[in-house]
Length: 50
Image (cartoon, rainbow, N blue to C red; front, side):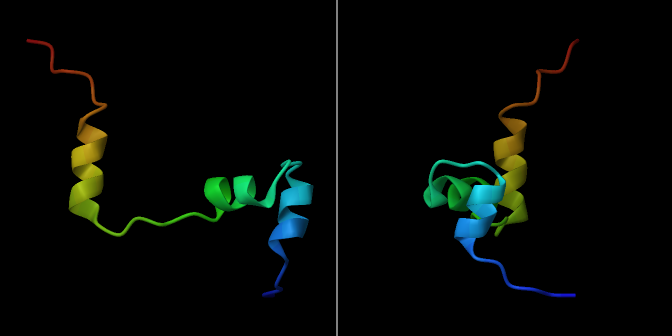
């Protein structure tokens, strides 16, 4: 079942104070480039122990 729900209703359900908070947090942009994502993830990986 595919029902449409307004961002306002989603925001209210999540108890967000603003619609923009919901949009930024949950309805934001998706991954567009796997290579860039891997580079960014690598920045947060702990260094190899040798």
